[in-house]
Image (cartoon, rainbow, N blue to C red; front, side):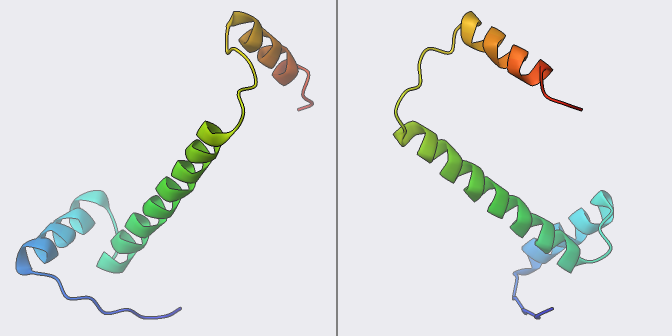
Length: 78
């Protein structure tokens, strides 16, 4: 695992320390890693949403669409 050192103003360090204590993280590194993972997930979701916006419309998402979708899910094994 690589190491990265960051400098924070006292107010941000106090905030991180408080989050570590209140949210049950073992270290500030665990907290920062979690923030980075969440940002990666957010960016991935944003990419999926933008791809969806740019794709051609597949049809109306009406009651028939959702009924068909439920039927497909219900037929899935497991």
